[in-house]
Image (cartoon, rainbow, N blue to C red; front, side, top):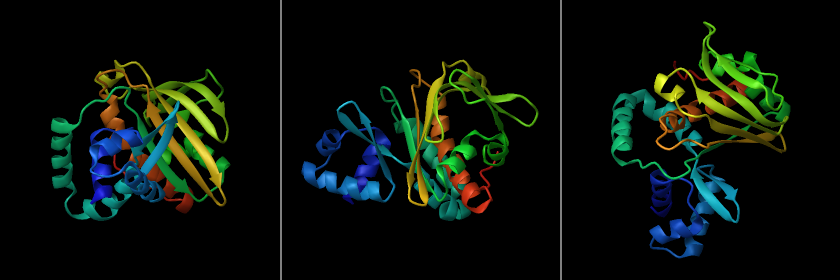
Amino acid sequence: MRRRQLLDALFERDGQTLNALAGRMEMTRFGVMKHLGVLEQAGLVVTRRAGREKLHYLNLVPIRDLHDRWISKYVAPWVGALTALRDELEQPMTANPHHVFQIYVRCSPEQLCEGITSPDFTRRYFYGTAVQSTWEPGAAVAYLNPDGSTAVEGEVVSAEPPFRLTQTWRVMYDPAAAEESPSRVTWEIEQMGETCRLTMTHDQFPDGSVVFEGVGEGWPMLLSSLKSLIETDEPLNVGA
Protein backbone atom coordinates (compact mmCIF):
# COMPACT_ATOMS: atom_id res chain seq x y z
CA MET A 1 0.00 0.00 0.00
CA ARG A 2 2.74 2.51 1.00
CA ARG A 3 4.79 1.81 -2.11
CA ARG A 4 1.74 2.15 -4.29
CA GLN A 5 1.05 5.51 -2.66
CA LEU A 6 4.59 6.62 -3.44
CA LEU A 7 4.19 5.58 -7.08
CA ASP A 8 0.89 7.46 -7.22
CA ALA A 9 2.55 10.54 -5.73
CA LEU A 10 5.27 10.45 -8.40
CA PHE A 11 2.67 9.93 -11.09
CA GLU A 12 0.89 13.07 -9.91
CA ARG A 13 4.12 15.09 -9.75
CA ASP A 14 7.36 13.61 -10.98
CA GLY A 15 10.80 14.61 -9.74
CA GLN A 16 10.14 14.97 -5.99
CA THR A 17 12.65 15.01 -3.14
CA LEU A 18 12.55 12.62 -0.19
CA ASN A 19 11.32 15.43 2.07
CA ALA A 20 8.51 16.33 -0.34
CA LEU A 21 7.36 12.71 -0.54
CA ALA A 22 7.62 12.25 3.23
CA GLY A 23 5.43 15.31 3.68
CA ARG A 24 2.67 13.58 1.70
CA MET A 25 2.81 10.33 3.64
CA GLU A 26 1.79 9.36 7.17
CA MET A 27 5.22 7.83 7.69
CA THR A 28 8.61 8.76 9.02
CA ARG A 29 11.22 10.09 6.64
CA PHE A 30 13.26 6.93 7.24
CA GLY A 31 10.28 4.73 6.39
CA VAL A 32 9.70 6.56 3.12
CA MET A 33 13.41 6.25 2.31
CA LYS A 34 13.29 2.46 2.81
CA HIS A 35 10.25 2.07 0.55
CA LEU A 36 11.87 4.26 -2.12
CA GLY A 37 14.97 2.07 -1.93
CA VAL A 38 12.88 -1.03 -2.66
CA LEU A 39 11.15 0.70 -5.58
CA GLU A 40 14.50 1.85 -6.95
CA GLN A 41 15.92 -1.69 -6.73
CA ALA A 42 12.86 -2.93 -8.62
CA GLY A 43 13.51 -0.37 -11.37
CA LEU A 44 10.22 1.43 -10.81
CA VAL A 45 11.85 4.61 -9.49
CA VAL A 46 14.91 6.41 -10.87
CA THR A 47 16.86 9.06 -8.93
CA ARG A 48 18.78 12.02 -10.34
CA ARG A 49 20.90 14.64 -8.60
CA ALA A 50 19.99 18.30 -9.05
CA GLY A 51 22.57 20.28 -7.12
CA ARG A 52 22.33 19.20 -3.49
CA GLU A 53 18.91 17.60 -3.96
CA LYS A 54 18.12 14.04 -4.95
CA LEU A 55 15.01 13.86 -7.12
CA HIS A 56 12.86 10.76 -7.61
CA TYR A 57 11.19 9.92 -10.93
CA LEU A 58 8.67 7.28 -11.92
CA ASN A 59 10.28 4.86 -14.40
CA LEU A 60 7.52 3.86 -16.81
CA VAL A 61 9.53 1.39 -18.90
CA PRO A 62 8.98 -1.76 -16.75
CA ILE A 63 5.37 -0.68 -16.17
CA ARG A 64 4.92 -0.38 -19.92
CA ASP A 65 6.47 -3.84 -20.41
CA LEU A 66 3.92 -5.29 -17.97
CA HIS A 67 1.13 -3.47 -19.77
CA ASP A 68 2.23 -4.73 -23.19
CA ARG A 69 2.55 -8.32 -21.99
CA TRP A 70 -0.75 -8.60 -20.12
CA ILE A 71 -3.16 -5.68 -20.15
CA SER A 72 -2.92 -4.84 -23.84
CA LYS A 73 -4.05 -8.35 -24.75
CA TYR A 74 -7.40 -7.88 -23.10
CA VAL A 75 -8.44 -4.36 -22.20
CA ALA A 76 -5.99 -1.94 -23.83
CA PRO A 77 -8.65 0.15 -25.62
CA TRP A 78 -10.61 0.70 -22.40
CA VAL A 79 -7.54 1.31 -20.26
CA GLY A 80 -6.07 3.69 -22.82
CA ALA A 81 -9.26 5.72 -23.04
CA LEU A 82 -9.65 5.97 -19.27
CA THR A 83 -5.97 6.81 -18.76
CA ALA A 84 -6.15 9.56 -21.37
CA LEU A 85 -9.26 11.00 -19.69
CA ARG A 86 -7.64 10.90 -16.25
CA ASP A 87 -4.45 12.54 -17.54
CA GLU A 88 -6.44 15.29 -19.21
CA LEU A 89 -8.36 16.05 -16.03
CA GLU A 90 -5.74 15.49 -13.35
CA GLN A 91 -2.18 15.70 -14.65
CA PRO A 92 -0.61 19.06 -13.80
CA MET A 93 2.27 20.59 -15.74
CA THR A 94 5.06 20.94 -13.22
CA ALA A 95 7.72 23.60 -13.32
CA ASN A 96 10.75 22.42 -15.30
CA PRO A 97 9.14 19.08 -16.24
CA HIS A 98 11.40 16.08 -16.85
CA HIS A 99 11.02 12.56 -18.13
CA VAL A 100 13.57 10.06 -16.79
CA PHE A 101 13.55 6.45 -17.98
CA GLN A 102 15.93 3.60 -17.22
CA ILE A 103 16.48 0.17 -18.76
CA TYR A 104 19.04 -2.61 -18.36
CA VAL A 105 20.36 -4.25 -21.53
CA ARG A 106 22.63 -7.28 -21.79
CA CYS A 107 25.24 -5.85 -24.13
CA SER A 108 28.40 -3.73 -24.26
CA PRO A 109 28.35 0.09 -24.09
CA GLU A 110 29.46 0.18 -27.72
CA GLN A 111 26.52 -1.97 -28.82
CA LEU A 112 24.04 0.16 -26.92
CA CYS A 113 25.54 3.39 -28.26
CA GLU A 114 25.28 1.97 -31.77
CA GLY A 115 21.64 1.14 -31.14
CA ILE A 116 21.01 4.81 -30.35
CA THR A 117 23.11 6.39 -33.11
CA SER A 118 22.98 3.98 -36.06
CA PRO A 119 20.27 4.37 -38.74
CA ASP A 120 20.36 0.60 -39.32
CA PHE A 121 19.14 0.20 -35.73
CA THR A 122 16.75 3.13 -35.38
CA ARG A 123 14.76 2.26 -38.49
CA ARG A 124 13.97 -1.10 -36.87
CA TYR A 125 12.62 0.21 -33.56
CA PHE A 126 12.06 3.97 -33.95
CA TYR A 127 8.88 3.93 -36.03
CA GLY A 128 10.88 3.26 -39.20
CA THR A 129 12.95 6.45 -38.93
CA ALA A 130 16.67 6.47 -39.80
CA VAL A 131 18.77 8.78 -37.67
CA GLN A 132 21.36 10.85 -39.54
CA SER A 133 24.27 12.64 -37.83
CA THR A 134 28.05 12.66 -37.55
CA TRP A 135 27.50 12.82 -33.77
CA GLU A 136 30.14 15.50 -33.36
CA PRO A 137 29.29 18.40 -31.01
CA GLY A 138 27.35 21.00 -32.97
CA ALA A 139 26.36 18.55 -35.73
CA ALA A 140 22.77 18.35 -36.93
CA VAL A 141 20.62 15.35 -36.03
CA ALA A 142 17.63 14.24 -38.11
CA TYR A 143 15.31 11.26 -37.79
CA LEU A 144 14.09 10.66 -41.34
CA ASN A 145 10.90 8.87 -42.30
CA PRO A 146 10.98 6.28 -45.10
CA ASP A 147 9.65 8.95 -47.51
CA GLY A 148 12.55 11.27 -46.65
CA SER A 149 10.57 13.72 -44.52
CA THR A 150 11.91 14.71 -41.11
CA ALA A 151 10.17 13.32 -38.02
CA VAL A 152 12.52 14.86 -35.44
CA GLU A 153 15.44 17.25 -35.79
CA GLY A 154 18.03 18.63 -33.41
CA GLU A 155 21.68 19.26 -32.72
CA VAL A 156 24.41 17.42 -30.83
CA VAL A 157 25.13 19.35 -27.62
CA SER A 158 27.87 17.06 -26.32
CA ALA A 159 29.18 13.60 -27.13
CA GLU A 160 31.35 11.24 -25.07
CA PRO A 161 30.84 7.92 -26.88
CA PRO A 162 29.95 5.33 -25.90
CA PHE A 163 28.88 6.57 -22.45
CA ARG A 164 27.09 9.89 -22.84
CA LEU A 165 25.29 11.82 -25.55
CA THR A 166 23.19 14.99 -25.32
CA GLN A 167 21.09 16.34 -28.18
CA THR A 168 18.32 18.85 -28.69
CA TRP A 169 14.92 17.52 -29.73
CA ARG A 170 12.37 19.22 -31.95
CA VAL A 171 9.33 17.26 -33.12
CA MET A 172 8.47 17.95 -36.77
CA TYR A 173 5.71 15.43 -37.49
CA ASP A 174 3.08 17.46 -35.61
CA PRO A 175 2.46 21.11 -36.63
CA ALA A 176 1.67 22.25 -33.07
CA ALA A 177 4.75 20.52 -31.68
CA ALA A 178 6.97 21.91 -34.43
CA GLU A 179 6.20 25.45 -33.20
CA GLU A 180 7.78 24.72 -29.81
CA SER A 181 11.36 25.55 -28.96
CA PRO A 182 13.57 22.42 -28.82
CA SER A 183 13.77 20.28 -25.70
CA ARG A 184 16.81 18.20 -24.70
CA VAL A 185 17.53 14.46 -24.61
CA THR A 186 20.48 12.98 -22.69
CA TRP A 187 21.57 9.36 -23.03
CA GLU A 188 23.80 7.97 -20.25
CA ILE A 189 25.26 4.45 -20.47
CA GLU A 190 26.88 2.72 -17.49
CA GLN A 191 28.54 -0.68 -17.76
CA MET A 192 27.59 -3.12 -15.00
CA GLY A 193 29.36 -6.41 -15.69
CA GLU A 194 27.73 -8.04 -18.72
CA THR A 195 24.87 -5.54 -18.54
CA CYS A 196 24.53 -1.85 -19.36
CA ARG A 197 22.22 0.57 -17.59
CA LEU A 198 20.77 3.16 -19.93
CA THR A 199 19.28 6.28 -18.36
CA MET A 200 17.46 8.56 -20.76
CA THR A 201 16.47 12.04 -19.56
CA HIS A 202 14.21 14.30 -21.61
CA ASP A 203 13.98 17.83 -20.23
CA GLN A 204 14.03 21.58 -20.97
CA PHE A 205 10.44 21.60 -22.23
CA PRO A 206 8.91 25.04 -22.74
CA ASP A 207 5.92 26.12 -20.65
CA GLY A 208 2.69 24.52 -21.84
CA SER A 209 4.55 21.96 -23.92
CA VAL A 210 2.44 19.62 -26.05
CA VAL A 211 5.53 17.48 -26.67
CA PHE A 212 5.96 16.67 -22.96
CA GLU A 213 2.92 14.39 -22.72
CA GLY A 214 3.41 12.81 -26.14
CA VAL A 215 6.97 11.67 -25.55
CA GLY A 216 6.05 10.48 -22.06
CA GLU A 217 3.96 7.78 -23.69
CA GLY A 218 6.32 7.11 -26.59
CA TRP A 219 9.69 6.70 -24.88
CA PRO A 220 8.85 3.64 -22.73
CA MET A 221 7.72 1.73 -25.83
CA LEU A 222 10.76 2.75 -27.87
CA LEU A 223 13.26 1.95 -25.12
CA SER A 224 11.66 -1.45 -24.54
CA SER A 225 11.86 -2.12 -28.26
CA LEU A 226 15.53 -1.05 -28.35
CA LYS A 227 16.30 -3.49 -25.53
CA SER A 228 14.49 -6.31 -27.31
CA LEU A 229 16.27 -5.58 -30.59
CA ILE A 230 19.75 -5.64 -29.07
CA GLU A 231 19.16 -8.73 -26.92
CA THR A 232 17.09 -10.85 -29.34
CA ASP A 233 17.56 -9.20 -32.76
CA GLU A 234 13.80 -8.66 -32.80
CA PRO A 235 12.19 -5.29 -31.97
CA LEU A 236 8.80 -5.04 -30.31
CA ASN A 237 5.75 -4.28 -32.41
CA VAL A 238 5.10 -0.79 -31.03
CA GLY A 239 2.81 0.29 -33.85
CA ALA A 240 3.01 3.37 -36.02
